[in-house]
Length: 208
Ligand SMILES: Nc1ncnc2c1ncn2[C@@H]1O[C@H](COP(=O)(O)OP(=O)(O)OP(=O)(O)O)[C@@H](O)[C@H]1O
Ligand SMILES: [Mg+2]
Image (cartoon, rainbow, N blue to C red; front, side, top):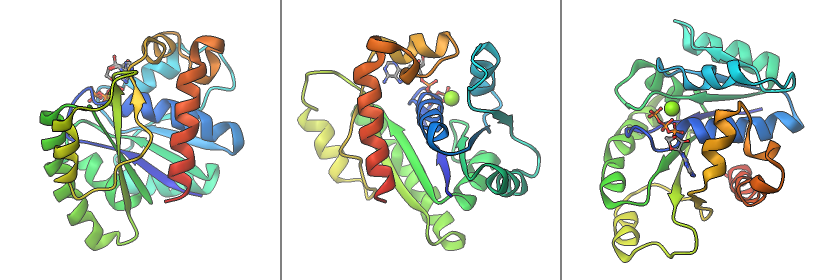
């Protein structure tokens, strides 16, 4: 029974993509809910176009997000929170203070990695009230078949946050699946490699 926040301070890093795919995979094994805490409402839109009855339930964040997370955890067991792209947003603050694990997707560019200093500070603040919070950065949109540049590796070393060994590669199936209200596990052979990397990431998450 865990609460996972997917957060960060950069738009377009992959929070919604990770939230949808990870939460959907967890939901296959045990009841899981997804909370869309981003006013942009991307996860809610994705749920609205899904035609599969088994698709994970997605809830709009309520004013009392802390209480909502608590209630959902009692009903579903696992709860994922898709956060807005700012650590200063009140939803991110509540999510960081209420979750067990926070995943921070970042693109493998030095600018994106340097921007993680904001989330690092927000996590430090949250640890004071949520001392068991476990953060992990996840490299997303890595170029397939290229090794990460020397610059990115150097930037990573300056960041005081655990980085998942599994990097999520840039693949069209991540976009296409969302467009069809699906997750990568529902995309057959097109989603095979993406599904495998998600499974690999989940293994790491479970070891945290
Ligand atoms: N691994 C990937 N491969 C290919 N496309 C990706 C990948 N991850 C995310 N994308 C695409 O990049 C865009 C941004 O991703 P996403 O919406 O998940 O980011 P976000 O952090 O939730 O953005 P926002 O901050 O606006 O909420 C989307 O078009 C998404 O389909
Ligand atoms: Mg999003």
